[in-house]
Length: 224
Image (cartoon, rainbow, N blue to C red):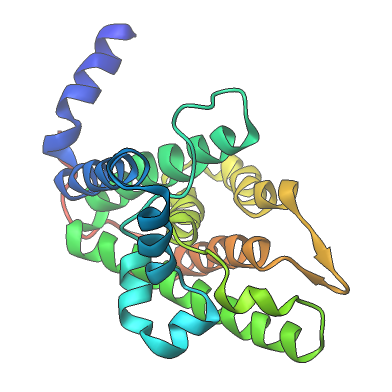
């Protein structure tokens, strides 16, 4: 078992080179922001790529694409709930499920599916924010809040991975993908917090994609 795991780890860069490169980029960005920059400069960089309402109105493309270059989580605080989120978002969603998608459909299609989940979930969440602000449910500082990371795209890949499972495991996995973000649910009147909305929408997008006939079969040969 240990030998098989070791071989799988060693083969990972060859079997999923796009995902491997992306994970290295995310880890490098994590170290750079937390160790290479001052707190003020780090907040400025992350604030610029945040997909908040102000940024999406001012520089939407830069914010949308820049947001997925940084990982929002912890790699060191093992006893925290944030680390559980890291395991799910970075570990399962990106390292495992995005790599699976890359092997199944190829790097370009996998990247497109990941970005589709990130972009669509972000835009739909933005609509929810605008509605909530208009009704007075969200505080006004939501407009420029810090909101960046890979989690919406990761949620899409996590849910899409139901296609890799036997039929009996697909409903429990879908429930898990939809349900785990609810652990941090905060209500603002009748509206949940926008992070929960975005995570659930990411999973819904993944489940919708899993039902697309063209995606239910591999498009590339899986490397052995």
